[in-house]
Image (cartoon, rainbow, N blue to C red; front, top):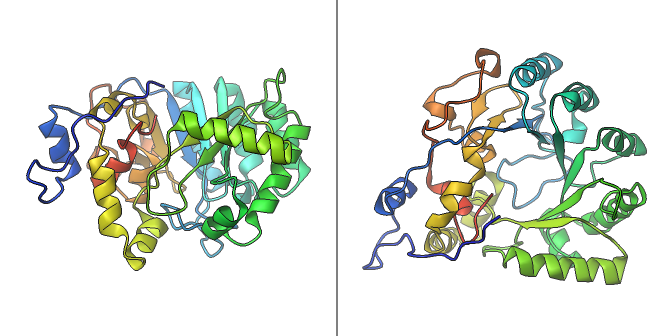
Length: 324
């Protein structure tokens, strides 16, 4: 990933109101359009065993939305036609969908890279580890902080220790260890209403602390700004941080992140099978092409050059080094 330095921020020169994201693009003579799509992201449900403060969905134990086997079959059929380079399985907690194994078994032969995003504590038994290892699933694990108090404040009491325990099990299975080819990546999100430190700096710190204090090894750390949607938006609002956080995001707008945004090469499928430009637009119910379309109705990748639907939450993806 090319790390760009923010150029001109998106507030106007008089320091008045922050511009809508669409106007910021115009001001920088930019368009956000699709490139060649190569990644199919599949959200298999909003049910989760955690209720994290930073969640842009509002996923949690009370949510009952889960992708059905019928919808999975439609996703599998689409994958068979387009042969994604990457299949990215997410949630909620994907492990809580009883048909997760079925989806992985069917889609793994159709792609060269299959990823699963986990909160770590939802990997409830060794059967999941065996499944992931069998298909070389890339494990992308949420691990917001090396500080137990900060992590538990964001995700719930005791979650840090449970996450560490699972990271050790993943290492024992070969994940994140040199020479195994089993990839373990961590994702860190800030615990409050601020932007993350640089990815290079954070990764060095995480690797040093986790190796020295806990004996954990991993491949790569990804640092992302929290997206002001769902539960995180509600927390910002209730804590009085909303206005300042939105200003912070817009001030950090970086025009050179646009080319590398994941929405340009990714197609996101909701638990009920509808199509979006990205996971965040899915949370905001902004359908691809501003038209509600089901995966069963889509027969090919979106056309390159077609516009990506945007809204002000897109500032989170273009702040600093951005989402890539």
